[in-house]
Length: 365
Image 1 (cartoon, helix red, strand yellow):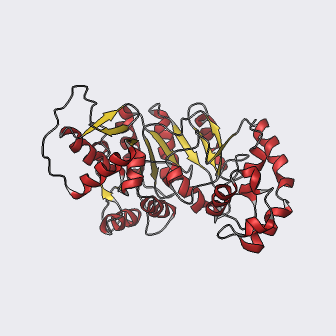
Image 2 (cartoon, rainbow, N blue to C red; image 1 turned 60 degrees about the vertical axis):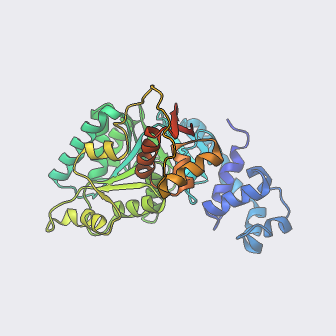
C-alpha cells in the first residue's frame, strides 16, 4: 500500500476545500504530505486558502477518518487513484475540477484507447432501449469501453448491452464503493467487476444524496472521449452530463426524436442549440471519431508549399512546440474537440506534414 495514501485521502477530505483548491495546495507545497506539515503563514499565501482554510488544515481532524478508510480499501481490494498517479484516468487530468482522488474497483483499463459514455433518461422507452442496444452492438467491433451511471433506463441498458457484446463497461457512482445504488442493479454491477469496474470519488459510508450525482456526472463525461445521449426529457442528469462534456471540450452526440415525444425533447434541444451533433447510427460515431481510419504503414510524400488552414496551423504549431504529442494532449492545447482534431490530423497526414505513431502519438515529418 502507498505509504503516502493517508495524506492523499486526507487532502480530499478537508472541509470546504474542493478538488481545484486541493490540487493547488499540492502544487504549492510540493506533495500531499507537505500540505499538512507547512506553517500557517505559508498556507495562507496559497491563493484561495487564507486564514480560515489554513486553520482547518492544521487541525488535521480529517486523519480520524483516514485510518478507517484505508482499512476499507485494503479489505475490499479498492484501488485509490491520486490525480498525479500514472494509472489515474489521463482524460480526467485535462479537466480543472477533476477529482483529486478516485476509488476504483475492477479490472478495466481506465486509459484505454477508446472510451465513450452513454447516458439518457431513467424512464427510457422501448425504442430508446432498442436504439441503445443496437448502437453498442454495432460499435462492438471497435471495442470501446462503455461508461455510464448505473441508473435506471438508458444507463443500465448501456451496461447490459456492453456485457452482452463482451465489451468492458465502467459505472460512475454517486456514493462510496461499500454499496450499490439502486440496489436492484447490484447483481449486474457485481458481474461488471469481472472485466469492467466501479469508479467514484466518494469514500465509503457516503450515501447517494441528490447533490452527489452532478459530481458523478463529471467523472462520466471527463473520462470519456465522447458522450452520447440516447433519450432525454427537457431536464435531467443526462443533460447535465452533456453540458459538462461540452465544458471539457469533449464531443457530444444525440439521437433526434419526434417533436412530440417527451423523451426526445432534451436530445432535440441539444441538437438545436448546437450542443450536440446529430447522429443516427454507430457508423456516424465511428466516422466522426475517426475509428474507421486504418493505420497506413506506407510513407506519404510530403507536399511542398502546402497552404495551411488556420485550424491546421494551430495543430502544426502545437507539434512544433511539443515535438510529439498524443491526440488527447493535442486536443487540450489546441482547445478543439476530438472529432475536429482527428479529422485535421488525418488531412495533415495525407499531406505528409504529420506522421502518426503507436499509442495515438503524432509528430511533424
